[in-house]
Length: 376
Image 1 (cartoon, helix red, strand yellow):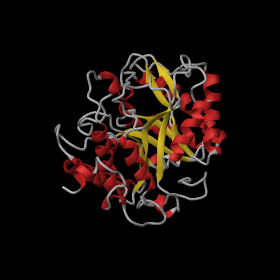
Image 2: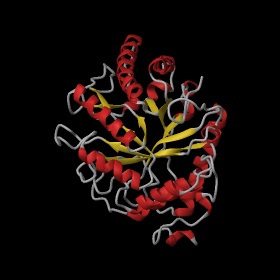
Image 3: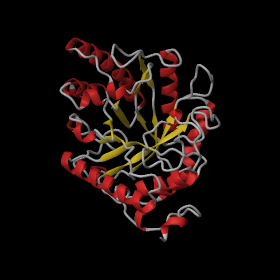
Image 4: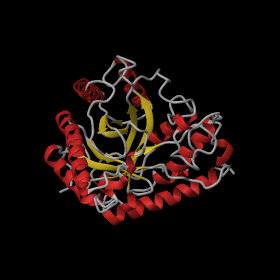
């Protein structure tokens, strides 16, 4: 039985357009990343600086935030998850609880997204315990981890929970049934909307989508193939993304949500948008290129009724802390891309209960950068 989209439970998701049919506005969201509390005490989740970040998100037009507590595993062998991350677990859980409460006090909805941090630097999508016994132990450890956060989500009235993030080696393989069992077990604990954050290039092979309420995608789709491809090429790429979203939603009879979107602030960010800024050096900062990629992606998607919305990757729990990523990083805060984000948040969407002028068929309310390409 499908659960609620609206405030915790009274409106089901009967179809791919269930978000619209339930009378819920499309998800206008921003992910707020944690600050390393061990190094910056008093600036993480639940702090006074975090309150300022919430205020910024609201002024930008966000109606949802995503919060991302982490657990850590040593390497890709999947030997288990340590709940302690950057501060003692009980302190971290209390900080996340307060962060959720503070968002709700402002009228913001919350998606809780427990992440895994791989200490060796590998990608969580490649975790592989190798043996049946190893996978069984990993599934138990992961289940304990995500149920811990599901209990907090239930206690605090979180509106949406992601059961996992980019676990390709698990959910696209013969090992997937054990993850599906965890998702079904979460329903005994948590009674809000359940999703899972698939990677953009494996969501169509993710076999646990039937256990979810909403199909979640970390949507770092390439919109162009070559450096120098301009707005027209990127827009055509985004239309292909929209077609994939529509087909996926109609196949599974569920709305699609982009649990993460983002582009780095550099030339041609839409060509390989998944590239991590920390691995780059001597990068030219290009706010215009970042903004154009945002606009190209969102223009066709906001006119798709099966598209439930998106979370921008990302702001930070202390808005003044610029130590968390390089100037060419993903955050649109204070950049031209923030204006595109604000414009998209303010526009009427096909997923909204009331439909008006679509985002993709009008000029964005942004001077300068988009005028360079819009009339060509």
